[in-house]
Image 1 (tube, one colour):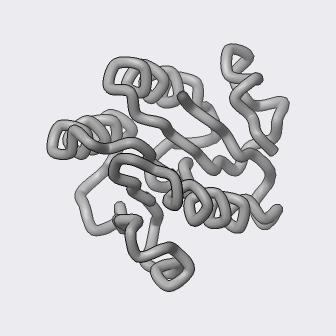
Image 2 (cartoon, rainbow, N blue to C red; image 1 turned 135 degrees about the vertical axis):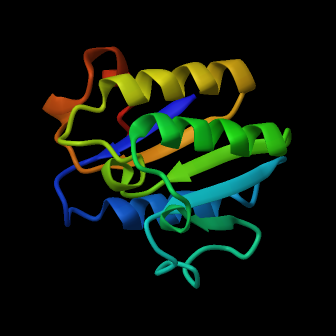
Length: 137
């Protein structure tokens, strides 16, 4: 499953994402990971959630980011939820064309049974048509 939290920069998407991860960890059966562009939210996330600062890794383009996600999944078969904040930045997406990256994440989600909750600085109108139902805010 993939869920999208969308809106322009500064619209409170990160707060929604943090609330969601801290609520979900209480009932999660597997591992929960939060990917971000810094460690800024370290003290706002439940200590059972693994925070990964993606900038610590040499991710230069979207393909490398997808490989990074696949590597995480291959190392943790119990991975249940992945929360992605600042998606355009951490996934190294130039501009705001997220369709290809989100389509790949959808396939990964279905194949490996991992739930993705993604915060993206785009409007609802920019969400790919096939993912319109995935918007949760």
